[in-house]
Length: 282
Image (tube, rainbow, N blue to C red; front, side):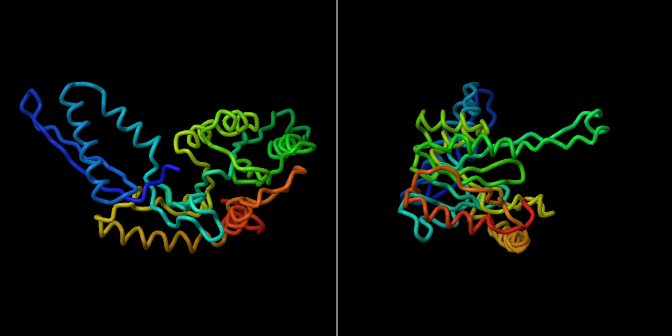
């Protein structure tokens, strides 16, 4: 999983051919030390400055590398209780939600269209179609009668699946084909591939709680006032989150046994998301 231990900022500058100062500030990351992260940041900033000075489009590559391949999120907990070392990390994303990142526990997000009716259906009082019921039936059919097992959850915007019969490599072609066959959201599939992990949101989206996004999108220990404001926001957010669930368990399908390595993930996920409660979804 691409979840570094250390982050730091670094800057670089030089004069362009027109004599104007060109400067850039970048983030760098490392699993060894903050000093190493700072060196990486300065090297990246230097590359960006030189690319700008030469008139190339290198900065666009820098943005893609930063946004798509290395999630810059606050690490809340590594190796939660009961989970195998290196199998799970809990982070806080850019809009403040807690995220469960898994190396092998395959979560699959399925977005569902908003059900609509024609005027004629409305006049005939024809019931609005339920995409969730239809999608759940397809998932159940996929699991039934085969050497497979999964848990199916309802979310505010669709379904969430957790495959139970084995672990998966998020970067493998087999995994990508499997997620596609189950109707996984294309953006989620790409995220799993780029970040080499599966992700599941454990806490509500703040706007569904009537809250704004947090003051800090990325952890920055040097920003003391921002860090204090972030702590206050997190306290309000966590308090409001207690009244909502992220998903609700619809059922467990398939005849295969559950891989024992996945049991702690299931327990952690269901407890954190309120999957067995009747709270409103957020």
